[in-house]
Length: 406
Image (cartoon, rainbow, N blue to C red; front, side):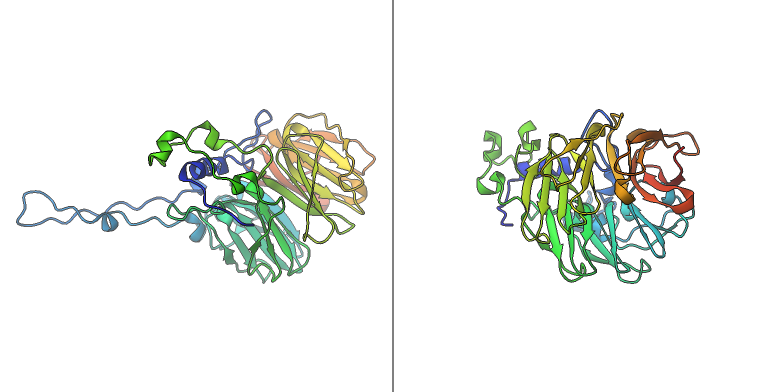
């Protein structure tokens, strides 16, 4: 997708927005949430003491380069092994033949055979990981700073395949853009989607990634943005409220992706965005959802049966891949952040304040329950997976737990 450079004032506003994506602390009253800022910033090492000139009365200052070495972006650093990583913020999970894998803040990838005991894997990034996918025994995880890591041995070892941290001296709109979801149709073909309509595709199992446009060139790409007089005079550090605003039509965040039983691909995003492809992602058709707010997840079953869920408990279902929609009553007003599809149209959805919605099949209504931790907290839940006789594995801002709805 061709891109033109953007001015610094617009870029700084975009970076602030990236910290407010609905990934970590979605409240029922507010769509924008804030992730842990520590996951985005590396600590600068202390400046070395300036050398003294024996013949001078005052110290001689060292060159700026020597006194303050450039910090290393956390996206390029190995994740630290933390003793309580199992209680840290987790954002996505998958189940493989060898067990469960969950990903989250500070590059944490946790592994468990039973959903109860977790160990942390060695991962070559400290960027917050928002999504994990599996196909044919291989694993991929992705997240902030455009990071994508890959395992070819069932999660035993991981390699960093992509990182695009923001750099102050290269003004590129794609730098620093978070990946929000991954989907692999087989071991070689995959998609990564994210903020500001980011889409990346791979045809070699995630070793290399290529950007692809799903909405065409936006108005922001086609025409330069008018700056304030102060900015025109060289004040590139000044921005106002308009710099933080997203265009009403262009570059919506793409939050979730799924593959229907018919083979079609679907994407749900912010501001009522819904995209579908019937040719394996080569071309995309934009359709509007009945609800103009953000959708954070999409589930798919046989044929063209799909369901989207998101802000303030809104759920919509379609039997024809989005040509028509039916509003699904949930009885809750809290945002729904994660879900899993069950056989015959059944589903489990989870979200803010520990809410868990369950229906046994597509003809049943959703029943709401509340998950509480052992300490009585009702966490923000971001994902759920079936766990056999144990019920369900739920993950969120308090880590991972097993839960059986009553």
